[in-house]
Length: 93
Image 1: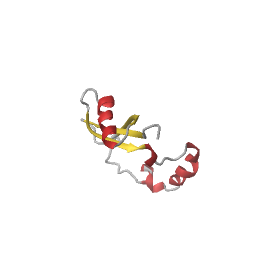
Image 2: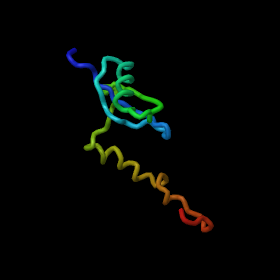
Image 3: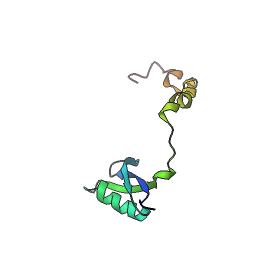
Image 4: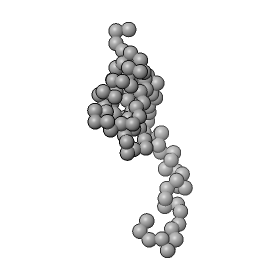
């Protein structure tokens, strides 16, 4: 192997509840990926948690599959907020 595997890096900030994708880097293993991610993506101590995920383990949909993948949800009207009647006493929602 001439190149280290690619890792996708996710950081949770001090004020956030969810990890956010911040970028990618090459590393020999998970420990190295986390240490390198700390140095590259959390320069001002803004992170409290780092996830390093091998890029080969991420499955993603294709933008060309947008129609067949998301259109079935449009037929489920109960998922839309307009399906539920709002009481007259409730204002500004």
